[in-house]
Amino acid sequence: MSSHADPYCLRSRLSWRLLSLQAALLVALVVVILGALCATGFVLVQRDEDRVIDVVQSALARDPAGGLTLRPTAELKALREETPDLWLLVRDRQGHSLSEGSAPAEFAGIGGALDQISQARLGWQLLEDDPRKPAARLKRIDTAAGNVQVITATQGKLSGAKAVFTTSLVLLGIALPGLLLMGTATFIATPMVVQRAFRGLDATADQARRIEIHQRGARLSVEQIPLEVVPLVAAVNDALARLDQGYARHKRFVADAAHELRTPIAILNTRLESLPSGPDKTRLIEDAARLATLAEQLLDIQRLDRCGHPFVPVDLVSVAQGVAADLAPLAIAAGYELSFDAPAARIDVLGDAAALERALTNLVQNAIQHGPRRGTIVIRVSRPASIEVTDEGAGIPADQRELIFEPFYRLTPLDRGAGLGLNMVHEIMLLHGGHVSVLDGPHGGACFRMTLPPLQQG
Image 1 (tube, rainbow, N blue to C red):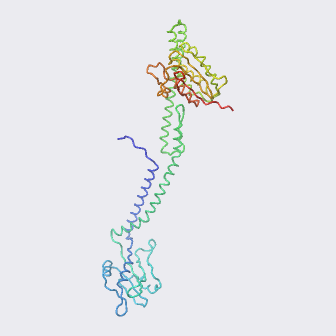
Image 2: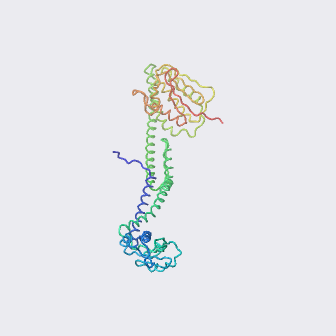
């Protein structure tokens, strides 16, 4: 079982929780209203006048004297049993009338005044009048006794659970549309509100994505972000500050160690020069050169943070000539021939001359140290802006051509190199907006190519 919770969508979770809260509040409101109605005796009155009128229509007849009478039908008997307080008034156009039950005084004398009305509902308003006032239905119908006017109403309250159920249905009929409306508004508005509230957090996340390993002093902004997230951003900024401090201590240690090594290395080189010529002297000089290179590479780690801004025009041909002249004695002493191929005209790029010289030096020294101690090492400068270093060694396997630029990576475990040179070349090329690649040499071996953006002439 996983020990960590899966990520979740805050917008969706807020929407559902707000909707659930709204539904719970509406249900609670309905329950409170029902409780208040039950406590005050205010419940819906059952209005079943149409059924009464239908029963009267089928039971109404004329007596021998021409008056109105109700035949004792089964429906009428059942209605009287179900509704003890049943009342009704029947009146024809000839002035005959019939009544049953105790008609409310409000309706007892209005029949004649409403002869021209075919139907009407007489009663009270739900919210403004006294709910205990009686209500009635007036309707003119055709019967076996002729056309008559009927006024009736069933009085009395719904009892028990039926009253609560009926009232609940009415109230829910009012509440459910409101719930649907609020739910729709919630699902539309909540993501918009959350997105607006987290806009500053999105900007802070973009800042975090742009932080690079060589960027010191970078901090995340706490502006326009929710207060609940400020502690997290502050903790990240504290972590970045600690990383900066640790990185600075590390850089100081590396720089101090490299500087301390330079003096004994210089003394060692002086003493080696005084030795008589021979294979042992050559090997010791190469080892001392590798040691000096390692010290310079450690210093280059510190130099990379400071170089490159502002860049100035640099002639790649001049850089390559200087490196070829400096390393020719070392290459010849190791058994190689060093060839230089470049156009006569300048090839300018924007960059740091010392860094580019260091990158090319690393490539040439790498060819000298790891080659077969025979053949030719070629330094070639070509347009639009590239420098190649080609040797005649065993080459680089295709599956390792990306790995060799990682720090401290070696092709073989017994390799005497420190594994920093090619990584340094890669970092310098990135700093200049270029790249370094490995190809097969024309006569076997490897071809390292540094490609840079050419300087656009105005």
